[in-house]
Length: 424
Image (cartoon, rainbow, N blue to C red; front, side, top):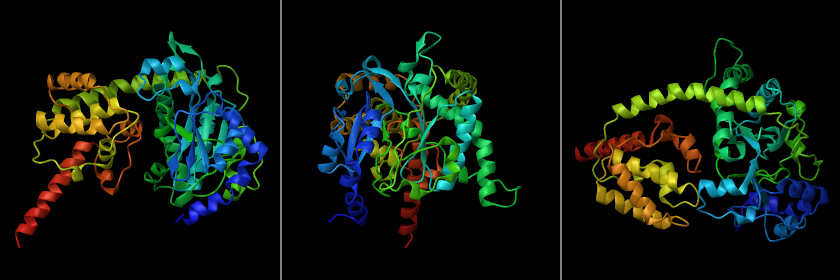
């Protein structure tokens, strides 16, 4: 039996997506991008693309409720194959749009951040910016590929996805952080001497979007949870936006991609790269210190129920990000003292669930290389795990910064509980 939310959106899908202006907006934005329809809960096959504007309505008649596309621009999206390496993807990729996903529990927080980001982009000489409502409580801000220099220091910009978009996003987050805290505080608390450092965390841009082949909701696509349309807005009128303006029966279609100037975002990219280089030096020093001081822990009978959600998601098998996931698992298992035979057995069981599995030769090479060196901790939480789409934190995750910490704490709590039970 379908849920109330599903019934609500299915009542309007065919009527809404039959609109010629909506079809036109979605189709034009989809050109040279990988697209995928969503059928309320599940997604369709990938890679896919629209051949004709009418494809959108045909998919709707088959049950599609929303449409999603890539940030990356491809020579031919249908040539993409799961398991392609970085060089193969670079050959097919012709560029990328820079997109920030402002994901928040509160629409007012999202408005504050959107305005601050646009102010910063304006400061860097970017006047042509696209912004749309996400369909729920956030916004998507886009700077088209045309605005970026095609090469910096003999490095082709198109090949630097997702690295450079991530750097730009982190640069923006850092530059607006203090103002965001002040603005959110002013919104929530009258006492100017109290700064709400927690609230801005609810609105920070979602780095999940800045990962290879990740898809985001297309302009004028519906949102399954709200049945609202992802409408395009005027960047100067964000404050005036209300949820009722995204009523799919009343939307007026506008172009999401602005008429940008060639190289308009050159200053932003160069400033972000310089900022990242300066900060990377100090960050590397801290990481080396952390790894140097790390000593492996020996835990007996490591149970899956003590693993954090990100590791459990990896162990269920992946389509993308398998090589990064292998790096995580090897270092995690070694860090908690798992012996070589058990480690190899678990890696083999995990790889069988991948689609397609990694080649055995690659896994053996990585294991051999790892066991020649001292164990190191897996990457710290959030960004690395968001990049492969497995970060789904629970309440316990807020207490830790690395999956190893999670397992150790869980193991300690479990043993303490057992000891207490044995007393009675």
